[in-house]
Image (cartoon, rainbow, N blue to C red):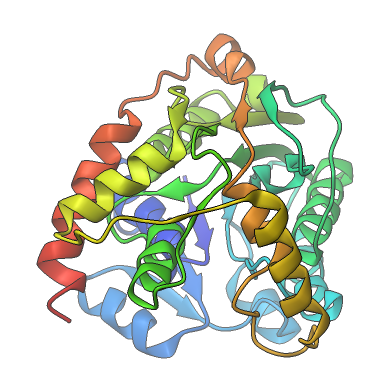
Length: 326
């Protein structure tokens, strides 16, 4: 079985590469990414990496054909930005990749629970519940989902993960830590909102189950989380304390934070860097959101192998050993 992992130079893709290689063999699990330096580092470890851009048709047509399984996690992921760059990275790149698949190819598309967020408390959201596409990222990820599900040439499966964290996280907690150091991190609202996380190790487990149960997973969408809803700000404070950061966070009412964020957005072009505060960013730190993973449990036999506290504890140890020394 030949497996291709797109976005293998990123946090999620690299974990897939390291997780699946011991199972299927280093000669059978290949990765692709755009970052030449990171590609070379992975090659030096012995991995087979094809360096190139999924929007380069000649690269895709010549290098990425004849795989039995495509795990597509390459994406532009941000809560801010104009639509066109997201379309190019999340939709056009997916179109290009789908063109080189065959009718027997399994195509596992790593999507996002971002599309469930609606600036309200939502709990136990199922895969058939309403979507709310609030930014270019969620809009284009949904477009990507529809491309995959409607493609006649593949065996498709969609995984919607919620806030992927773990050792090597470059997005979720590093963003919060950076805001803390810049004295911009505030507890939004009451600080009692609950959320789900997804350990990268649990997501790797879900991908492996999809490969093993491809006929059951065919044409399906699955929510993937750790299955243990937690109080967000309790865990943020625990991580900060674990890293030795002792300054207590101040509170700010949600309405005020939202207005400040809106002001920042209005004075910032969509083509510019992300403003200091965004309405979406403020919203996800204020509202409760959790996903129902019953479908994955019942159909894939998905059982989270790691809870959120273990994931965060491992992240703290890694961050202290690696990131703080960098």
